[in-house]
Length: 251
Image 1 (spheres, rainbow, N blue to C red):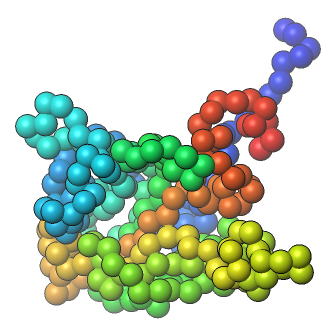
Image 2 (cartoon, rainbow, N blue to C red):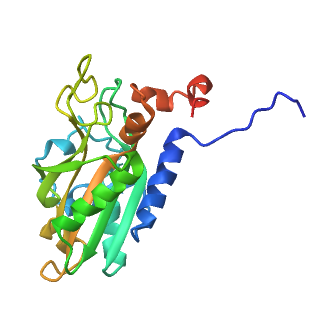
């Protein structure tokens, strides 16, 4: 065997999936999986996405032909929520790391395929405070104890109320401005938007066969590629899929 053989290692995305999985296991979450080829029911209908929602258009979705069954490449990992709730009784605590697909132009921050992490917790007394505490614990474990988070009201069809989750900028310690000028990472705001979340919409619970008058839950979704880029200081998502060993050997 050649003495020049080098030892391989996990891709930075695989490293991130392993790391976040271990963090959520500490909180009692297990990993769930589902198909990448989905139906319109699981990807949109059961998640309370209106029939005229732009996400259903070809601009966002890879529809598969022949399309008699409404098959598509999943645009998020949220369909696994429905499938899991249909086959498991609460209490439920799952995360769903997996690949998703969007029909959009590729640039430094967008890819036609990327990885997402979905989280779901269902019980009889689940609250927004538990959601905030869970995400705060996760982000502090991933980025450091100095991290702060805030929730901003937002709209997503599958949660009500819905929120955007921001994390204090690690580059400027949340101050917004560095001694040399405006922070290039947060653009001077002191905050970085990291994910969407909220309380599971009653229609979603009903579509999955759960009694919405008895059960409550929260859900969240975050781009794993984005977390890798933030943690590793990568400025172009396309590098993660380039297969360039010079890039991958850095991690």
